[in-house]
Image 1 (cartoon, rainbow, N blue to C red):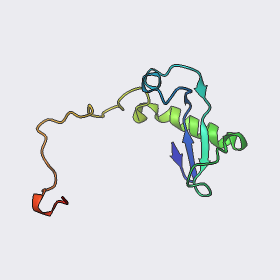
Image 2 (cartoon, helix red, strand yellow):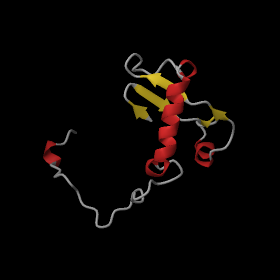
Image 3 (cartoon, rainbow, N blue to C red):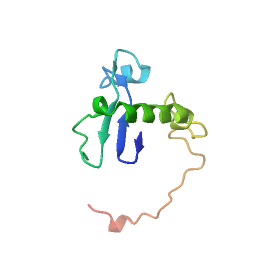
Length: 100
């Protein structure tokens, strides 16, 4: 979740590198991480411990927008991934100009 200079990484299962565990949301949670993008573009320094009010504010915003964010599946009103009726190219493709 981003808001102004802040970016909050939501709490995730400790085994988030395991795709199945992440999808099932199992295992102990890693605490949310907070980054100040104004001073830390690389997101190298988690400042959640020193800015608990900002973490709480962004978590409240996530809770308010949860249905629109699609945290537990596709967001409300979102089309199913990879399924479009009558798909067609939106841009023309010139094979002669494509890199080889």
